[in-house]
Length: 272
Image (cartoon, rainbow, N blue to C red):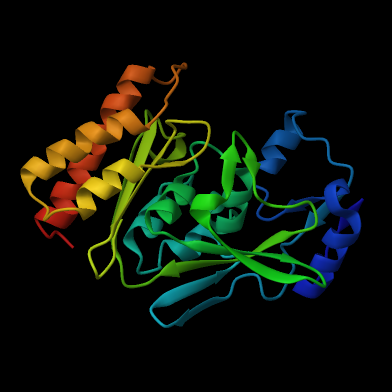
């Protein structure tokens, strides 16, 4: 059965009542493809595309608060470089106009471009259940394993909170440009106080952070020598596999290459 609530409270009530017997549908850019291939056979569908509050973006206290239905097209205009660059890489205009950040998170793809940017930015998310309120969770704690997350059956992702005052950048390597799944993608972010965030996509069972690399960068002033050390360290923190798009060895090496490029161009040389 298809449910199409008009307000968030109605959507939350339906999700709480149906739990694991209903699948939430945001933009549908991933799930509808899976449906056409016979890979997704839902018992019930909760279509969130008509919820009136879905596209709201608020800014307060140096943070952007993004409602669950904010699209990739909206994110391309957000003054958060890593997130805007990641959003711009996703498909063509039609896909960006429909696909949502919450959907990107919920799908939990290892190659989730927007997820990688959020991890580097130390973003947080709100998971909400009718009658229980919201719980705030760092995006870094959301991914558990391949396509497995902390989202409970009765909950919806209702909001993502991103720092507005961090310097950040994102880049990917793909075989056919923006319409292709990333072979490797990377994001780096730095707070006004100098705290770094580093994340990678397509090099593990889910989007990964690099805590040892971050600790290295946080321990000393940024220099070309430190960047080389960080690039080498990052290669030890990922767990890529070989597939038809690239070998594990290539992906591992490209993590170091991308990190070196991002740190040099956007942080050492002050391109931003």
